Image (cartoon, rainbow, N blue to C red; front, side, top):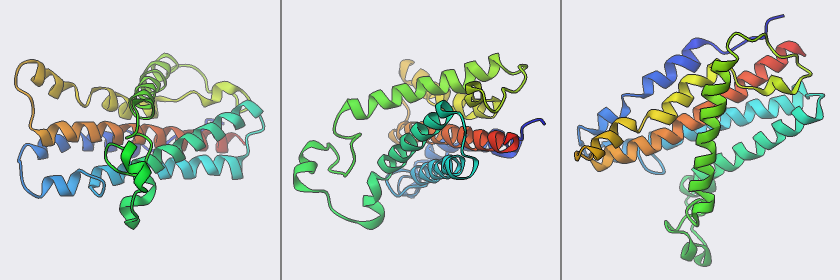
Amino acid sequence: MKPRELPAWLWLWVPVILLPIPLIALGGRDWYRPTFLGELGIIENVTFVAIVVGIVAALRLLVVVRPKDPKILAFVVLMTLGSIYYAGEEISWGQHFFGFGTPEGWSEINRQQETNLHNTSPLFDKLPRLLFTIAAAVGGVIIPLKRRNAPPAPADSIHVVWPTLVCTPSALCALFVSFPWKVGKWLGSPPPIDVKDTVGELKELYLGLFLMLYLLSLSRRLSSRS
């Protein structure tokens, strides 16, 4: 039986619809920054929701589907733990939702005085982002395009964890969303600060969508073969 995949409106049209958001920032309106950017802004909270949906899909794999191959099981456990870390760091582990303060010792080493790790060192910020971007390029673009005509991998094969084409639009958007603004800066016309901050936040949102779509797709494909 051919494995079920995600609907096109989710994996194709949602990433495309989000692309014009930086254009809204060009208006320079006072309401844009508090509405779209920041810890309580739309972009960051949609990113968090996307990752949580991915976590739910991963937990469903572990609790309901229960992969029999120990390698697949270990992979899903790692993906679940990584997703929880990503979601927690994205919202500073609930600090801005619940309003609790940052311990004095921690605020001294955190450049934004928040309860997270990614603002303490590039090791927890730039390195994970770089590795995730590479994963999006390889897992979201190269592998799906290379395997687009390959038959589905058996459910008991480790190759079943390979991403499919449903991950490609969000991965491409994550890789190239900041490209026009970098070109403008290189040409001597740097974008407004709101645009610059928006494309950075939007990249994180696309990476969150990539993760969500991958885990939803994997959950569907494994469920249809179990």
